[in-house]
Length: 111
Length: 115
Image 1 (cartoon, chains in turn green, yellow):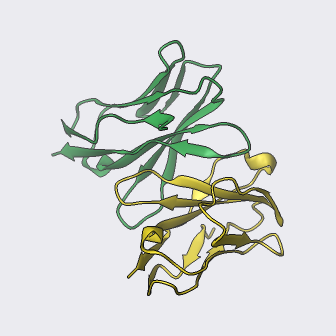
Image 2: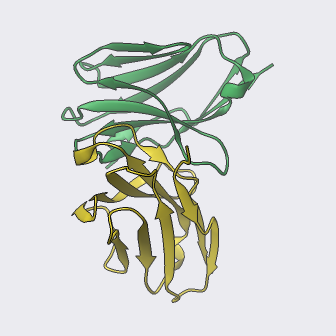
Image 3: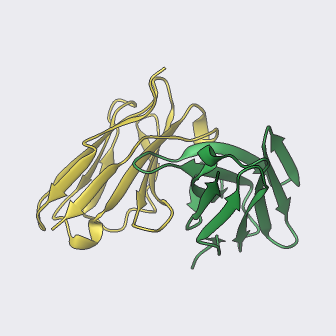
């Protein structure tokens, strides 16, 4: 039972354009959502988060949108840079820090 | 400051061997988590410590898996009688707040291969 799903295994965009990564979830009890970025042979690095009581959070080039009625969140990266090429995981929290991760989306930003 | 460190970075074990994986969290971090990441998947929660207390071990896949954090800092994940399905990257994360709150900072992981 996959509670957090990232249905696109990969995404390729041109440098300078927008990258949109999507995530769907099934459990309406999740109270917090996060995006992590992972380079090969490294651990996931925290990018941005959003509380379930909000619908948007922005940090520099990164914006996360939450649509609770659709149980959907997305990460927008504008403008995309080659250094953004990595695997992106969305995660959801049920409290007490237990994170449920999606399968990941590999983003490639082409120069 | 130093981040979360894990050792060894790579471990090859023969089926049936016992292994011990170490995690050094960020100094002063109260909460510590272990996750297992299979190839091509996202990390899956194994267990959570607040200081030395193991408050959630619901993700441990079998009684062959055991974790401890006796002094509330360094943690060890032990896997007894390893099986091939235990092959994965084991990630440790820590956060500064109680009750598992706060941003989780991950270590580089230990890649375990069971032959």
